[in-house]
Length: 303
Image (cartoon, rainbow, N blue to C red):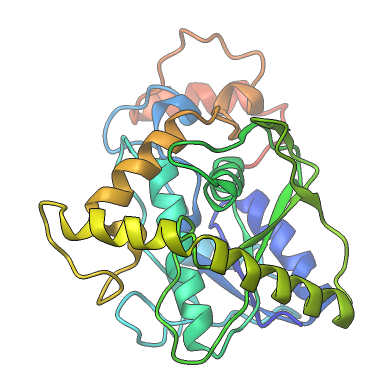
């Protein structure tokens, strides 16, 4: 059973999330931190402050009356009455892949505080690819490379849960993450394979939990070594005290290196406007926007 659907504010995600809400009878929460990497690589060379983003009122217009908008709590833990959480990244964003991975961890922590709730996150290709790679990494700086995330490509991340446990990072070897790859093209290292998703029965769930416990035991030595490295890090933060492991300087550096090896798989402006000359520079001026609108008048697309 799924508790809530958390979606990027981009319309293509909202429209997908609405259909998921209808199937599972879930509420919808919109998280700005799950949005596309906010950089020229995806949107073209806009002048600062970058492309205009839709207001909550404009986004809600795409949510039909039979889907309820709910909140899962903002970053301070308070309820969001509007069902919108997170902040829009600043243009041009430099570490969008890392921002998406951190946000998934934060939402995983929220799910734990809700008693082990199951969330559906509707986001973008780089988030799917990054989470699949990080949660699948078995060795230092080694992870499968996701070469393509197709439309409605997905990844399922699951792990055993215990009440009042500390947050678990995507890179935590003791977390016991089980990773299921759905339709994504992955280049495996050392013939490493990931499972493909299949609806889990109660018997299968028990087997997976047993497997996760065995994996956690085998990785205990790695966990001790990681704790020693963290204690020696310049910031000297205590592990699992007030932040997730990924936000520690040591694992931030490792995550950045892993994500840099991933190909950019998000949807670019050029894909939405295939005939737009690549040298075209889009500014925030009225004339430029008017010219682009005239060009796109015969096209049907949403960004």
